[in-house]
Image (cartoon, rainbow, N blue to C red; front, side, top):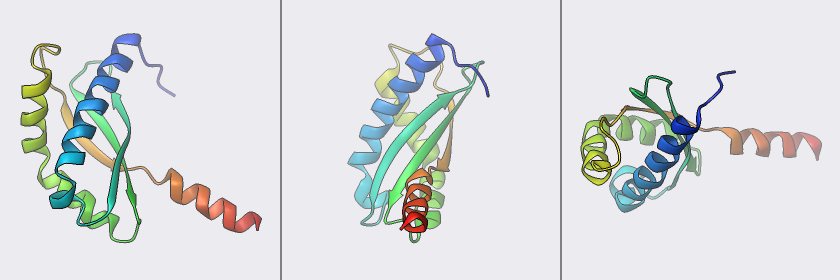
Length: 113
């Protein structure tokens, strides 16, 4: 498991806060009536890539929503750059993944019952 520096964590939290707000604002367009939550942002050591983990509820059709978000990632990166331009010299490339931890917890819950 990769160890994260304080700087990586700070940048990750900044990106998570601001990108989460952008996603919330555009949720009608991107999420198609689903609840969209940015759960974690992990920034690589070289600060050139931010891995963004999304939780989508209900999870049916979440692959389509993720594909739509990936299509809009350059627009999201541009808007994010305008917001954080005074805090970051370089805005990392955004990579989006599904965070299926809630589905996993639900599955374990059903198995235990």
